[in-house]
Image (cartoon, rainbow, N blue to C red; front, top):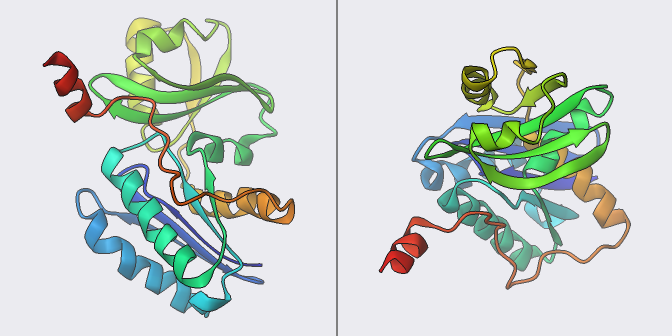
Length: 224
């Protein structure tokens, strides 16, 4: 397998380049400098994996939800590589990529991303079943979807913040935070590989990020 994946959904950039048995992963704390760091980071992981861009079989990118600017940046960068090489580009919902490493967990899994403004992007998985689709919720709204007796595992960089918020409302909620490090780009490759082998349709030129919240510009226009 020869593949490249990028996740720019949050302030960290997650990248992975797989060249057969050589797997190179990289996570960069980019903050507001994603546009400056993304291309050099792509070049770095390709070089470390000794993977020539023209040999890439397929590409994978996180579709969102996440930051508006970051998502557009990641998708645009990989669309450019796809256009130049002909390699198909597969988009994977960001929160879906957080779940596979915990598929054996018997409790409830909640992948979460800080959506700012006291809200969170999250989904809820019970077993391997996605019981709550990607949503934009406050902590109070999210708790309406979770039973007080459920054991929940919060996953993602922003999980500690979400735990803090829900325990302020429901102090006895049984919850834990996965404190390890995940390179989501690796999961994107695994998930995209299944699509590639199934000959699923890749992203088209007109396909873009998945937004579940209106941008500030759209909200301002509506307020008039």
